[in-house]
Each structure stands twice: as C-alpha cells, then as structure tokens.
Length: 514
View (cartoon, rainbow, N blue to C red):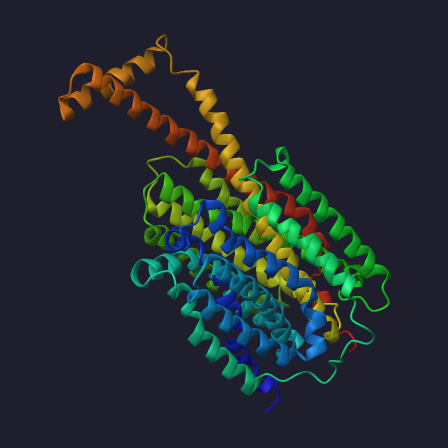
C-alpha cells in the first residue's frame, strides 16, 4: 500500500509522537516539588529539569529538516522515538539530579525533532487539497498537550509518584515505533544533503538558541537585566543568532535554508504562529496559577477548567479542516483572532467571586479560537513550499511556535510579579487611619474575629491586621492577573493586520514542483 493509502494510520502514528512530546514539555512542572524532596535540591537546582528540556528542544528544532534528509525521514523519526523512550525510562529511574537533567536534555532533543518530522510526514501523506485535514489532526497533539499535561502530571504524581510521569511514555513510545516502522515510508524525492556537515551553523544555533531559552526561563528569577548572568546570556544569544543567520546565508551547504522566508505566506505564517504561541502558552500557564493560588482550586479542578477548551479546539479543528479551500483562509484566521480577543477580554472581569462556569466559558472561547488559528495558518504557511522543503519548513515553523510560547510565559510571569508590586504599593496608600472606609472594614473584621476566636483585643487586633493584609494581597494578585491577560490580548490585536499577508483561497491550489 502507498503512503497515501495509509494516511489515517500514519496520522495516528505521528500524532502519538507529537502528543507525548508536547505533554512532556509541561508535564514535569507540577512534579518538581516531589523531585526536589527526592534529591534534596534547591528551587534553582530543580528547575533545571524543565529548563534543560526546553533548551535541547529549541536547539534541535531548526536543524530537523537537514537531519531528516541526511538520515532518511523514516529512519530519523524512528530513532527519535527510540531515544525519547529510552530517555524517558532513564528520567524515571534517575538516581541523582544530574543524571535526571542529562536524560531530560536527551529527551528534549529527541522529542523536539519528532514534532516537525511528524508534521512533514503528515503533509506528505495527505494530498495537497487535504492539508487542512492533516493539520487538524496534527493540531490535536499540539493543542491538547499543554492542556492535559499539568493535570495528567499532577494526577500521576499524586497517585503513582513522580517517576511514573516519565515511565508512562514507554508503552506509548513502543506503540508509536511499531506503527511508524510498519506504515511510514520515505518519499522518493528525499535526497541526502550534499557537501560536508556545516558544524559552525550547529555551534551558532546551540550558542544562540540555548542562551535565549535559558534567559527566558531564568530571567524573572534573576531580575532580568539587573543581573550580570542574564546580560551575558543576552549577549551570547544575540551573537549566536546573528552568526547563525550570517552563516546560513553565506555557507555553500547550510544546515538551515533561510531562503524559505522569501515566500511571504511562510514568513507571515511563522510570525503569526509566534504570536499564537505567545498568547496560547501564556494563558495556559497563567490561568491555572490564578485558580490554584488565589481561588484555592486543586490541580485537578484547574485542569477541569482547561479541558473544555481542548474539546472546543478539537471541534473547531474538525470544522476548519473541512472549510479549508472553501472559505478564504484569512477569514478563518480573523475569526480565530476575534475568539481569542473576546476570551481574554472576558478575563478583565476576574475577581475573587468568579465562578467555575464563567472561567470555563472563557476557555471554551479561546479553545475554539485556537482551532480557527492553528489549522489555516499552518496550511497557508506551507502552500508555496516544495515538497522537498517540508522538513526544513516544519522545523522553523515549530521553532517559532515554541519560542513564542517561551517569550509569552516569560513576559507574563514578569508582568505578574511587577504589577503585583505596583498595585500593592498603590492600594496600601488607602490603608490609613484617616480613611473612613478602611476603619469601617477594620472594625467589622475585628468584631467578626472576636466572635469566632474570643481572644483578647491585642491579639485580636494583630489577627485583624493580618486578615486585612491577606485581603490586600488577594486584590493585588487579581489586578496583576488582569494586567497579564490584557497583555496577552494585545498580542492577538497586533496579530490582525498580518493576516492579510497569508494566502487566501486562490493560492490554496498551487502545487509547486518537486
């Protein structure tokens, strides 16, 4: 049977690899306190379990196209599954923190390469007129991963222990390898790259993207550019990326073909996916934090708030996958941006009395919007690429999505911290003996606490002041989260003018030469 005869089996195969990799990007976050106890590690030490994975993930993404051509796409994809599965076992069985971090680096590199390979294989397995359906299937893994990752990680950690967060990958990896071995084949036009390996490009990628990812993940903890460590990382990142771009444009046989950006659809699609990642991952990170830290939700209940958004995204992807080619792609993307703007605008009304239903509605709207963004942007971005360039294109495309997410999370965390301090300083100005409202609330709280505790007035006054301060911190936290969601909404507003650069319905049918 030909590749296209097995297209839905192939879709299931590569979706398994994509889903397990994207889940592993976030699944370990909720298990960090348990790992910290196992290895008697500090906060700065244990967070390298996440940072190391993201760094390796970022470094490998842009060169996956070259690696797929060099080793053969099927062989390289199966190798990535094997390495990822073995590294998952090593992570679960890690006897020390350093060994765990090493395994996470290997896992991040193998997993990072799987995602663009999966996307390239899907695009090649489906005929061009069905690329919308292919990207809808691929989007299930990309969108579901960040949604179910933290909830799944928390449930597994609470019931089985943190090591099973990694062991659970083993049966999925074995199934993905078996299906890939049976059904994936390399396209006939795939050729091994000519000339010597451009090691300088690889060195510059490691230096630039590795430093950038560490800077984004550690910046808030080190107070950004007030830290010499962050300043050094910023210089290394800028230098490495600049040298990589120079090398890619001047080398005879570069690792990454940046000439793909000459297509405006591909260039604008990457930029739009960067902004999508910015808003998507920022919201996925901040909303559960708000629910758990301020509203008192458990990890399971905060996950239940996110889950309907995943179902909405799945429904939207199925719908949009069938509309691609029938409706102008730009209209679909515009609707997706509007859904996301509306969802984040609703979060302007966050308060301590907000109910489960209201927050769930915002997630459903955003999930529906993500479905209208991911499928048409991906389909439009690759419309002019030659089939032999799909590997290079998918590597760059996923890099922009991941880096958008990293930037979004870093900026959201910084805004949350800085604006909480700002709002606290502003609200404290009103807590004076000369403010009649403050005196009234203070007296009411003191009376209520005396009724409950029956303690002497001096002790009761201290408890009352502590109670009022906790209310102040809650309010400053709510206001800071509102500022975060407004910033994420701004990304989607900036997003709208660039939609015009995408291809519409007419360019959808262009079939480039091999």
